[in-house]
Length: 258
Image (cartoon, rainbow, N blue to C red; front, side, top):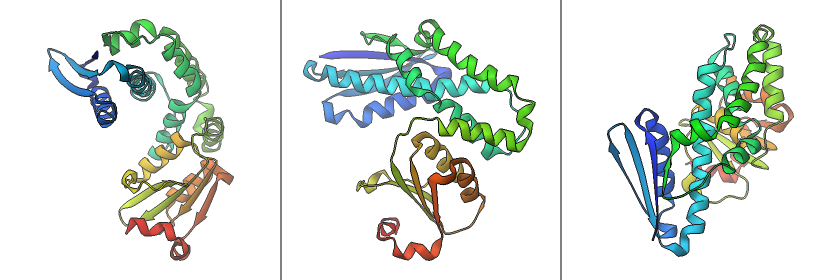
């Protein structure tokens, strides 16, 4: 059996939950046992799998660790160091999400080249002692934004920078459909039939998900004409195709929401 222990400080409980739930969701596929427990001020996520699955499970663990650092640790780093002029919440959330996803390829590389999955990994120690170069890279981006904070007071300048960041994100999906009903928004990638993955999203959740996916084309089928559609059209521009409720009856795929 191949065994691995991942330790996370209790103050980063959400990180530990994410790692545990992500690895647990794939455990049956690789005959992996995943469990967790708390001791003193640390949460331990433990996994064990047959040695013939070690290579594939290691890849899953590596991806999970990278995403945890690039999402949770980077978001916390931004919150502690970024100074932005006041804008409405949706705009600020979108700006921070764009910064989190900006130049992900380099982030992934810097983490991967320092990550060694031996028998034990203390994630917070790894982040603080092995990823100095990664934090320096993030600091450069934040310093650039902070140095131009007076310029970003203008809504026009703020959105120009936001659109620049979004236009330069890695494209993770070619074309997706977004549907709205009374429960919220639902994202359906083109040529995907797995309806179990569809989840109701709030306005903020939709904007956050679309920035992370950064698709080439967004087909947005709306029941209402609210500020969400206008906001998405403003930050994604020509990538958004908006169709209002009269067009929904023609969309066969919309039936999965009922």
